[in-house]
Amino acid sequence: MKVEKRLLARVEGTAELELIWKDGHIYDAKVRVASSRGIERVLEGRPFMDALAITPRVCGICGHAHLMACVKALEDAIGQVKLSQKAKLVRDITLMIEMVQNHIKWFYLFVMPDFIRLGEKLEEFEPFRGKKWKSAISIASEAVKIIAIFGGQWPHSSYAVPGGITSNFTNADLSKALSILDKVTDFFLEETVGMSMESFQSSKKFGYWEELKGDVKLFAELCAKYGLDKIGLSYGRFLTGGEVFPCISPGHFTGEKKLCSLNISKIKETDISPYSGAKVVRYNGLPYETGPLSRQFLSGNPFIKRLYKIYRDSYMVRVLSRLLEIWELIDATREKLLYLYALIKEPSYYTLHQKPEKVTGEGIGIVEAARGTLIHNVRIEKGTVIKYDIITPSVWNLGPRCERYLGVAERAMIGLKNPIHAEMVLRSFDACSVCTTH
Image 1 (cartoon, rainbow, N blue to C red):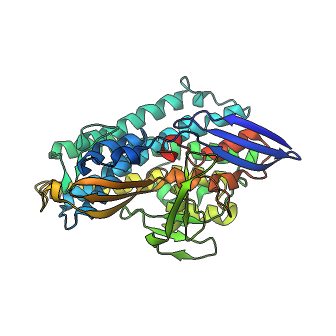
Image 2 (image 1 turned 180 degrees about the vertical axis):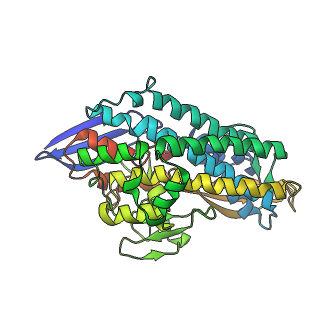
Image 3 (image 1 turned 90 degrees about the vertical axis):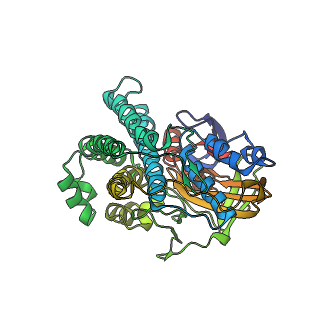
């Protein structure tokens, strides 16, 4: 038996992968994220509005999702907070765009360069030099300009507050956002799936993923070549807690042909593991995977339904779910931007019915971040945070084992024969150590 420790490159933050080899196979695997940042402790004793500025600093990639979960938790704690439809739509739009920019950068900057390590000559995906690598950076940077139009900046914007949003905007701003979204749409159709919108929609209707071209086709062919279409399976249980109408709905899949509603009271988090700075989270006592595969499976995406029937929750399906989710998010964002024209005279913000220093209560905020379900819990007494707890998507997926079950990502690496494949499987969860040990 041999123990191998590998420091992971190209992840958000730093993490170590410990592989225990036996007879040429991975016999056991541990994801070690040693640090513990203590963001929750920092919030205790502060005025609750400080959380709006501090929680987006949990992560440089999904900080906007933390803002959204935070403001929802605060509004739940305050109670009877009135929101305009305009503010709700803008929050949805900026949240979805953060996912889009993440998905693009993750695939082109993190996923495809792994095949170069396996020996493929993919000059266009060469880090810093490749044409597609540069194009992905460029279009992702364009996408976040939509967040800046409504939120003033990205990352670490704090424009959502209890009662609405702090920004106001004009018809010209909406037109500019739609123009940027058109560029992102063109990139997806021309580069990612390599076909017209009509052809893509036709393929999607019946889930004919084999008809997709562009970088999706190249990725699927490489997966088949290296056997990555059939490896990386974990428990096959999926969980989604947030909702973004019409493309994301909450629920969970038990792995036994049952799609069920989600009962938040069944989510339990335990203390930090002996070998990782992360906590253990379980739903009804069981480990669940969260993220784009979970979302698109539960929402009935025809592509993902067909892929799952053949390849289950493999590396290839997990990556394609994230990539094809881009279209769902773009489509929903366009609908909401067009609807905003009719709501532009609505107020962005309604004043709270009570003064902040008098607020006492408990609240929960659940949203979908790029990596999956994100939960913020807060308890406030007379305007001061007494307790704050965050359950990130990375804790669901990369969190350590408990007495009965391996972590989700740990389970997915058991039995693999190639250490690079193990790293790729781990990366298919979009690993983020700073979120894992927030």
